[in-house]
Image 1 (cartoon, helix red, strand yellow):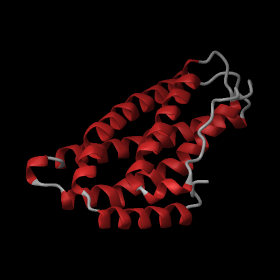
Image 2 (tube, rainbow, N blue to C red):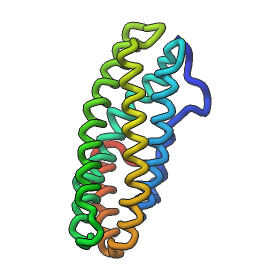
Image 3 (cartoon, one colour):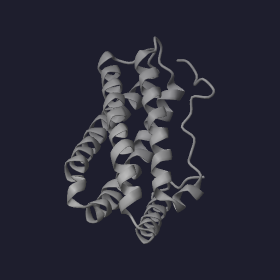
Length: 183
């Protein structure tokens, strides 16, 4: 087993970003793109890097569910209420919700597979787990592109200062409650 290469990390986000929840979500999307790259690194590596595997599993297990909850419980419903019919945002948000369900399903497989590889001191990851890591990264990148190109810009136009304050409060509470509070 190889050790994690320096610089291949998923650094926590600064807590101050929660004051502007849309900026926080965009910054978290950047971390998700890093996560995608790390998943692909694991999938293409000749030998298994247990440290990297642990970091990816930890992030998927602890941070990803909080991000999904931020969007599904608060952000998407708020945007649905504020969007205008001509925005045609419903199909986009429905697709993103489907992506979240796939993220959770694939994420659970990844976490189980990586935890098993770590426990077994595996030298290599099984081909099936490598395919799952690659699929997760592909779906997540498509998802992020859709959110960053359509959802976030629309939210910047449709959400009021009061909406953003309420979103900030609920996200801050969720991150504190789930132990996923940024640094």
